[in-house]
Length: 226
Image (spheres, helix red, strand yellow):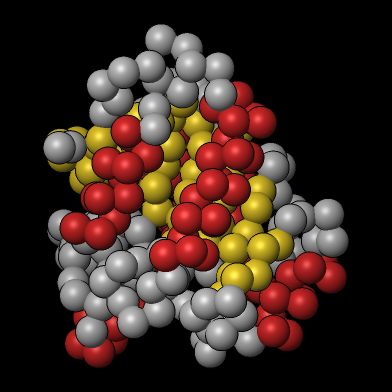
């Protein structure tokens, strides 16, 4: 079971919350887990707990706190509408600064994972935030907005072949701009990691998680330092 902690953004001094899942055994590194547009939900906290069980001290920052402190909504039409509104009202420069506070709060090596809107934010962290060892980005629909920027650390991308919100041409544009970045496409829809949604695909979720842990292990997360 995790706890709520406070972080302070270096851009404007705003204090926001984050869910922290600590490590009970050997620590492999720190992890910043970036929310979907629905906020730091029970699903996100469960993912954080899962990574902590694997040895990664995890922080899941609540990146919409300026708009609604502790924001968390259901993945239904009403929640989707509010989440889209908040994500579009949250500038990437602000996200970058808030993520830097979460990264700085963790002892290295620090990794980043993000889902949906958070998948794009994870790309942003790879491009702009120093101190990141490796990144795993899941179905980042808005990555093309930032495709002119180049990740400064190893990153892998995960997409669903049947994701109507991310058509093949979007994935192709990313691969053409960055041909050296591994892009994994699964026979799944959007949000295939979440067991709360209709697109949940347990096989794709397990494989993507395995690939994520592998890239972490190859980039400092396999040492098992105390």
